[in-house]
Image (cartoon, rainbow, N blue to C red; front, side, top):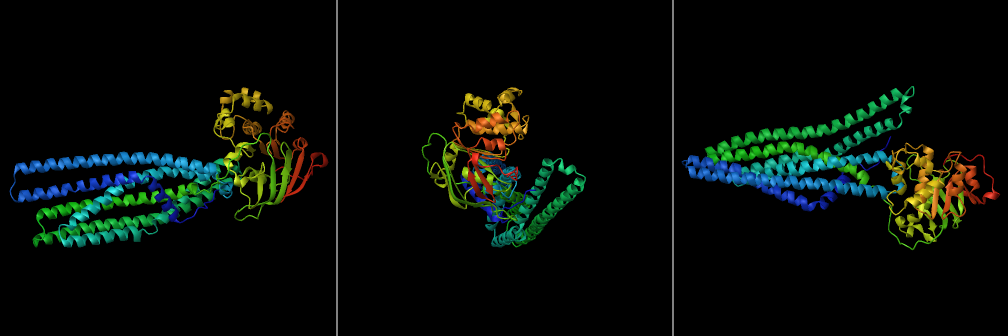
Length: 576
């Protein structure tokens, strides 16, 4: 189950929100302007009521009434037009935020260093992208409703202050009460909202584990284990949700109490002021309408508070993706030499930064590889063969030492440009798309003839032709309908069609179908191939087609030699 290693402070969520707001600042200011205009115009209703009451008190005439009604109609129509503009601008903002975050997160995932995923489950981490919807909807609610209610209350308070100094004091008490409810009672609201969200994602990660390990959970004791873990995670969520709800509920109670006391106090205070002739009856009615609208807005701000907490929790989740450490793509570009690449490793050292794990990696390794060499990299499990290939590819940065690619320090080169001359085949990497899309991988310059040559060399031509739609047959993330062995050959084809000058293979040649393994190995490792090859393997046939062998133990290259002068150690493991 994935662990959450992201920082727990809400400061990072606020920082990401501020950055997002800076990018959308023009439209945010437009929404604020529309809200201010709508808020000012909305006060025409109590002012119109005040004028109507005063007109009636001094004698009713039809013409002032008609003029008053027409003015009010025009103001309310303009108010609704401004609200319509707000809705349109906010909708455009939501779309831009979605596209902006999709592009940013996709770019970060592409550039993320492998160290970012050493302690977590990358697919489970990407689930946090769904909080983009939360950010969209919560942000829209705050801009449309929260901002409108807040400005309505503020403008109403300013209008009250012009009626009488006592009402100005009433405003100040009201403002202090609102600040107390929002910032004192709710001072831990963001933390508890983030805690609730994280416990929810822990449940989602557990459900993904169940879906991924469908056989394991059917063991004899699987039911009890599943029930106990599910119960524990559900209880954790309920505890976190309860802590957050307690804060939200206290704030809601505070708002409701304020609503009751403020309405009652204004009625009594206003009545006394009318009796003392410090307010007219029309002003009292207008003040009551203003305060009622203000407090109704404050009551609705309770829902806006929940939207704010959801927004901050969503930004925290997106922060897991937006804060991924990325590779540096700064550096020099150089003309690409022709022919197979040369490689030199000098005092290379690398250590994993894993929690609760012993130090591991590569230690003080040095070697040199001239063009067109074919090297078998052998060693027991955990010896560091896979890590060495990743360091050569620039997927990890060494703790010390250097990797020289064609005589250039890899750290001084732009990695994306250098990798145009490299390819690595490791693990299981298939996208949900057609066979052709999996081979080309967006490289439209690769011709069908090049693809057919690679498929022929890897003995995949007949396999692909037998598929329902040939190269256009869709594959799922497992590579089906192709079996795993053919998927490995397809990954080799993907690497080879790019015409790499350095080809790195991690055990992809070890488990081929016996009927075609000799031919495929001979073709990939042929002496006249246009690439230099390092292949991590334990297969004797693969070793036999190489001209060099490096043996690794505990991160050290302990032996180098020619294949003809070295016998394979039977104690070598079959995995890295």
